[in-house]
Image 1 (cartoon, rainbow, N blue to C red):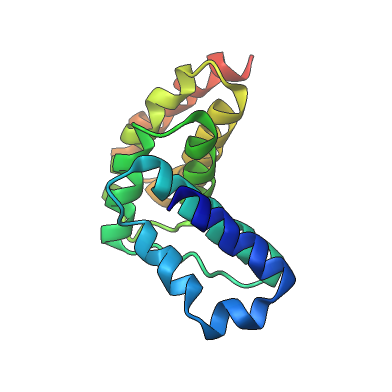
Image 2 (image 1 turned 90 degrees about the horizontal axis):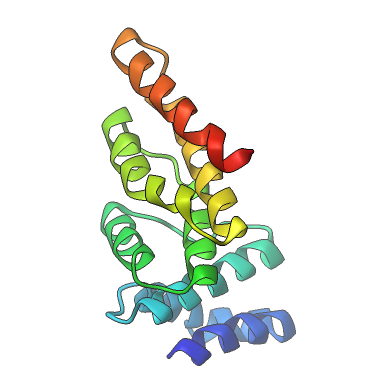
Amino acid sequence: RKTAAVCVAKLYDIAPDLVQERGFIETLHDLISDSNPSVVANGVAALSEISETSGRDVMKISASVLQKLLAALNECTEWGQVFILDSLAKYTPAEPREAEGIIERVTPRLQHANSAVVMSAVKVILSYMGVMGGNAANAEGLRALTRKLAPPLV
């Protein structure tokens, strides 16, 4: 299943119409619900590559998909984490509390040894800080996040 996900992305480069006609993109969406975190990561990577190639967003993140991505984030490889984090950075949380919850799950990645994982985590956090808003209730939380972002970037 891991290899099949990557193959769909490569097949899309060669024959995009075939991939759409045969429903392979929907199959990739199904792979995101897989129990194996490597399959989830490769499914996300394939959907990201197809989105980049086609110029349209085929990676549709719903609330249930979001929870599966966050669960897989803890158990997949470094590069799988990068793909998942990059897809999370493109997602727009519905409300500030959702953004805070995602940031809490992503923040441990700021301590990762792989700089690509760290930078992807920074990208997620920075994009969600805008969603958290500038009201007084979130001001202290935003200051704390800013302090957490400084050491990994130095």
